[in-house]
Amino acid sequence: MSLVAIVALVLALGVASRVLADRLQIPSVLFLIVAGIAIGPEVLGVVSRETFGGGLSAMVGVSVAIILFEGGYHLRLEKLRESPTALTRLVTVGAAITWLGTAAAVVVFLETSLEVGLLVGALLIATGPTVVGPILQVVTVRDHVASVLEGEGIINDVTAAILVVAVFEVLVAGNGTPAALVGDFAMRLVIGLAFGAIVAAVVWLLLDRGRSRPCSAPLHARLIVLAGIVVAYAGAETIASETGIAAAAMAGFALGNVDLPYHEDVIDFLDDLSVVVLSFVFVALAALIDFGDIRALGLAGLAVVVAISVVLRPAVIYLSTTNARFTRNERLFLSAVGPRGIIPASVATLFAVELQALGRPQEAQLLAGTVFLIIFATVVLQAGLARQIANYLDVSPMRTILIGGGRVGLSLAERLEQDGENVLLVDHDPDAVETARKRGLSALEGDGTSADVLERAGADGAKTVIATTPDDDVNLLVCQLAKTTFDVEQVASRVNQPDNVDAFESLGVHAIDLSMATAWSLENVLERPSLSAWMNELGRTGDVQEIEVTATDLVGKTIAELNAEIPDGVIVGLLTHRDGATEVPTGDHELRDGDRVTFLGQTEAVDRAVKRFHPHD
Figure 1 (cartoon, rainbow, N blue to C red):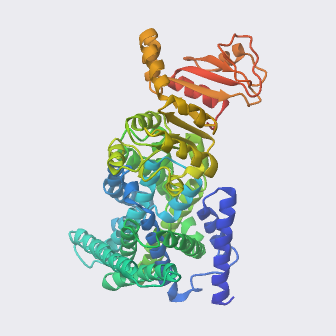
Figure 2 (spheres, rainbow, N blue to C red):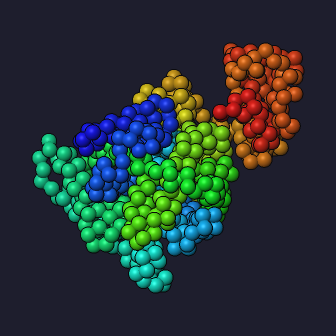
Figure 3 (tube, rainbow, N blue to C red):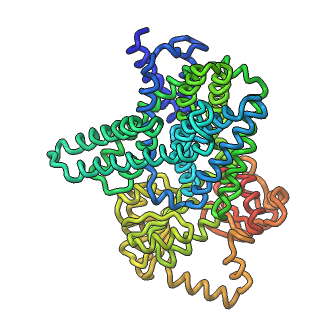
């Protein structure tokens, strides 16, 4: 086949993989790597190392630059503020532990030199947005978890690409002393970041001060951004090798965090462009996997995979995510999902050739085989099963959006967050947003009565929208948008004036009359102090949860039979019939489809009872 036909085939397979992944809700990288293997020398033999000649490294380099620019562009400062301590530890101490721990595993199990071990370890620091991005498209996690995965992917990709060059030049090729390793790494990092920042400033000036006609301005913005990516990558590479991706990532991050003209047009363009280049790069590099190199590793190679995935990754995550905001299951999810991507694959291919040139073919095979084995294993097991892992660990709650960051909204957001909800607080006041973030909450600055702001908040996929501002007109408009524009199933609102309750209820909104709620709370404190104190601790020592009777193993059961199946420490407190009537049930009451059962008891026991009958709640 001609080169043009092969490129067309690769792109077609890439796009088909993306479409199939979207339909099946499986990360696209799994299909991309399978497609690459299918057309590679191990199966059909359509693509080989000689197919692209010497141009493959340049094509991959520019493609990776585009992907990292796009990832950096989406990496907003608000995301980094979600879990700054955890992310900082993950990309510093965590990266160092991964590097040295991987090197130790490679040296011990594969019996190679320390220099090669350190080279492989540097490569496998990177997780990468090329794999994490597709995972987060099909797995919804709370913002602080997503921000850690995204931030780690972007930053550690840059770290890995630069560190591996420094290790090779200083330790493997012997062009310096070990003490020069830190200086070489720092020099390349500074060059890349500085050049990227300069390019970002130039792009911003061209777009902000440009004189394009309104009809052609969005097109010019897209073209200028594309030129900026290529200039950032190529310019930095000209100054020092393997600094281009740092420049591209920095340029994307800088432009994504300023008020860039035609921002939405640029985002749409980058998203489409990254899909194309990601498809090409993954399929092309997967086609170059030499299974002979992988098979030569034997059981020792599997031992390295286990050491990295089962020992090092969990250790790094648990050391980094000590904040109480990360639940046990979220830490397990982060431990189980750390797949490697494009950077290790592309750079391993380059340095395998370099090792061959130094007359070290066995070490070149070991390098390529180990890196591709780790990529293949983590993509198949971690990326391919990410949604199932998230569902099993119950770390994919739908979003709950609160409009209004005052005392009521802030207190409610904290309680819901402690209950494990995926909460986002929206307020137009930057001080309120900053206060929420300081208290460990996800917050977005913007007008909650704007459809654009609600869309940015994720209202189109939200489980619940709650309006908590002191202005009933604002709350009513928020509820109308949530119901009519975004079709949110559950909408609730604080109602400050009792006369306005009917207006909210006519929309199908759960209206909470503030004066009645206050009176009810005061009555409970005075008349039922023990119950009031216990209710205030809901979600901590005690909890109350409802389930709907839909499961076939519930319909027809009596309350006595249900009580026998639920854990100790929880009881059936209330039963709501299909017609809305609520009562304290007797043991012989038979459950019918559509009834609602209220469990009351210890937090963990209630949670187990809910999952016993509604495992995906």
